[in-house]
Image (cartoon, rainbow, N blue to C red; front, top):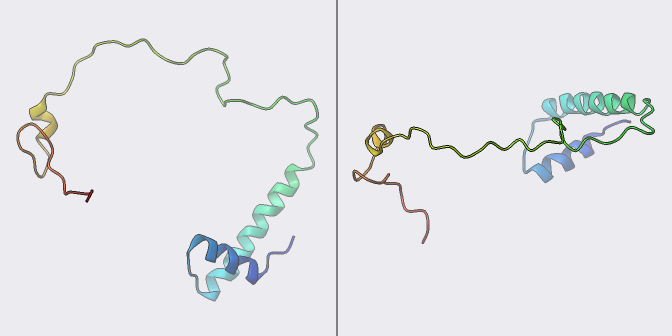
Length: 96
């Protein structure tokens, strides 16, 4: 499949990015290589292969039991904070 400069322009516009023409030419090559790779994957017969639900499809719950462990003291947590009031972090107001 051939990727045109216009296709790169559309992708750039959708991504809200701008590229010089030299970079667009490089993208054409990269995208064509990616599509060629996917075309190679189409040659494999996957009939009867069950889809994976997870890369670690063990069928068992991976959650751990809750356990009380050592915690960080308030003083230690605030020790590197640029601003704090002794109990809480102070951050700039972000909501109106």
